Length: 111
Image 1: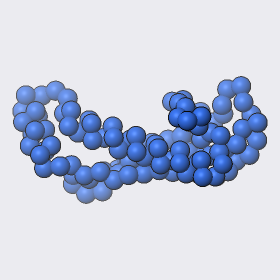
Image 2: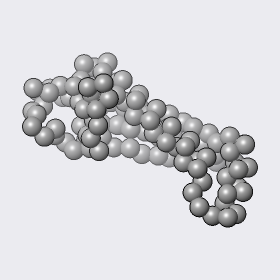
Image 3: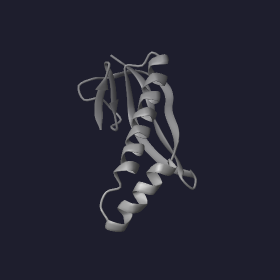
Image 4: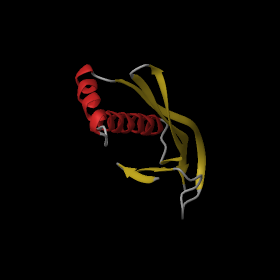
């Protein structure tokens, strides 16, 4: 996973091809906790009867991933980083109907 949002390099690799790490700034993370909405649960329950993708939950989790990623990037920016390397993403259930999405990686300054 390599991407660039407003010039920030974010990658799952430990290095950036063609660039050298000048300084390691530290661990950065971004997370969010999202809960299901009762209206979405009703529609998802009906969709579950006929099978297929539960689009309501897919959209909820996609938004959560974006927000957690953006928060990690903002934390890296606050440290003066050019990139975040070795990025990982995790999810966990907080309670029935609520999940946390967490992105974390190492903020670095490149040469």
